[in-house]
Image: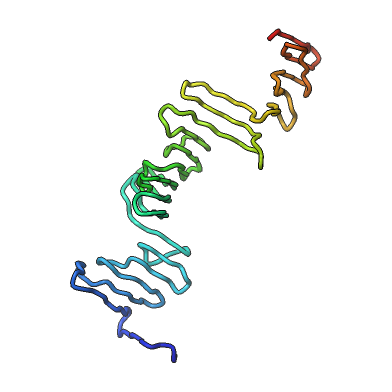
Length: 239
């Protein structure tokens, strides 16, 4: 068309424009080329990036099957493909890593974050998703559907489920002394336990415990365990 200022045509299946300078070390110069409807960039002895006619882009592959397809052969338990979002010069940013083990038949997707600590490193992974669906936070080998581990050797590990726009919620903590804690957060929060959607036990915010009742009542300076059932009763202990 009239807009084509330069047109390069080859007599075979490939057409390339090669570019080099006096410092180019590759045995073949860098190039931009086409093969059929595929546009590619060539550098360092290989095709590094491809754009197909359907708009799919491949890095490390000449046949991308998605809008962006990354491919790199990696050793077992080493990084293959990765995306690095760098904030500033040095090791500041976040990354997404793909780590596989062909021998064990495992795949992992890792999310990292580093502040002056290399984000493109498996050891800096903050969350891991395995091919079996297990998710790890603070661990790269999650053994359960959700496996949370403290990154500090003597730190507490916590899971907080928070109500929207509020400090109320449920806090599950395993502390560095080996204790496990389940607590309702908030000044007037109660802890409820139920089965099949029906409440069976309640710990009120003042420390009263009710089984079969939603309103356990304590008397002055006393805490109450109130059982409301056929063979129930009330047990009171002084504080």
